[in-house]
Figure 1 (cartoon, rainbow, N blue to C red):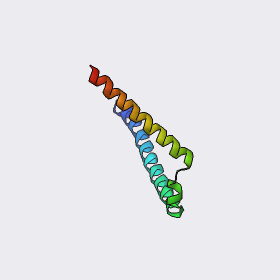
Figure 2: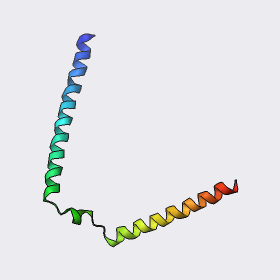
Figure 3: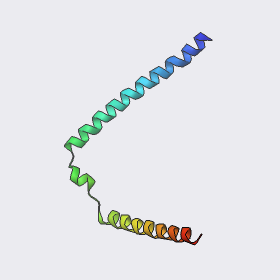
Figure 4: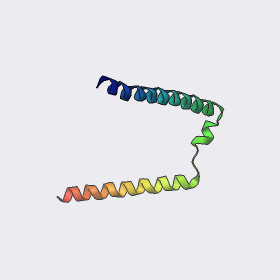
Length: 74
């Protein structure tokens, strides 16, 4: 039983260390990309995205008003 538990445990530890190392590498690469990038350009929205955001905000407001009307009638 002890041998079986050890054989199950060791591969899990190896996978954990591999995932931690991959996360560290990915984090480092992402920071390197960010340092060389134009942050303002990356965060800028095009007009289509802005229109969609405005449309979704209006829909949310209308649905919120409808929900309030439904709740007040009860």
